[in-house]
Amino acid sequence: MIKRILVALDPSPDTIIATEYAIDIAQKNDAAVTGLAVIDAGKIAAEAVGSGIGVMYYSDLLKKHLDKETRDISKRLIGEFDERIAATGIEHMFSMKEGVPFDRIIEDMKVHDLICIGRRPNFFYSNPEPESKTLTKIVRNATIPVFIAGNEYRPIRRVMIAYDGSPAVIRAIHSLTHLQPFGIPEYCVLVHVRQSEDEKVKKDSDLLLSLAAGYLEDHGMSNVDVSNLSKGDIADKLILTADQLEIDLLVAGTHSGSMWRRLAFGSTLEKLLEEDIRPFWVYH
Image 1 (cartoon, rainbow, N blue to C red):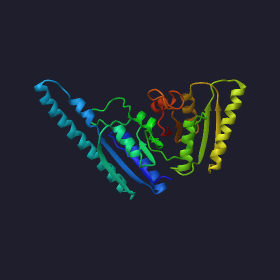
Image 2: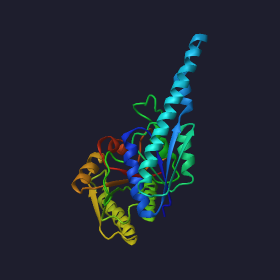
Image 3: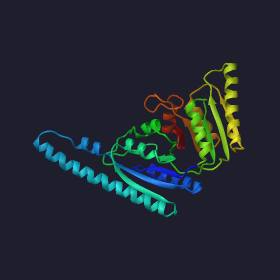
């Protein structure tokens, strides 16, 4: 059951898409939505740091300027969020908090069922970093499912699960089937890219997919398919399959102890995030 949805607000266009998905999920589940803007006070101080009396004076001025600019952007983000959600009649609230964005988001997750976030969130509004690590930190430490918005809004009707039988992807499947954020999908396919052409490996892969498909069917999914793909670049095969099947949502798990952005199939999700426009449902 989803009753509280958290949306991480930042200036990127992804936030608008994430908000639209949050609205869709809230309407289907009679849920409330919270918009969270974070002022990265530590980053502001670090950006303005200097040495010497004269430099310290100008550093203080710069800090005040960056702080005001950041708060103004936060207020704008909250105002836009409030206006968009209010137009739907959905119960909602919003907050502006100071601190490390990752820490503040993780703290708010404790009282929400799902977070919707863009794929490149950046909370240092005055001078966004070209590659923020916030998303990876959130995914690794999330206590709830993470919905990563795509580059465009599309209704979720057809779902593809990148399946390897790992505990992480099983948790992702369980959370999706139990919460049913978009209702029961019209179509679902389980895809396993085996790393060997050995006949035993293929049979093991077939069994893996068959068991998972049975689980999904027992949870109300009447149109479940499986795809046992031969060895190759996993991300390329997943993207090709998703395109061929007109998939709207990709489901994956994450592994603890992984390197920067190294998720369910080695670096596969990293590549998918870079090359595919679809949204993702992930769970640590």
